[in-house]
Length: 48
Image (tube, rainbow, N blue to C red):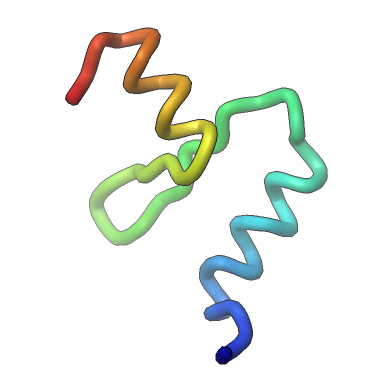
């Protein structure tokens, strides 16, 4: 299995420093959330 992409490594580095925060990660013109952050926000905002 290949290692993490540089983008995902950056995401995990930032998330490690901010465990109690929801991380909006900018990808081009959009902001994305991943993993548990995405699940939490989708439940709280009732998004599908």
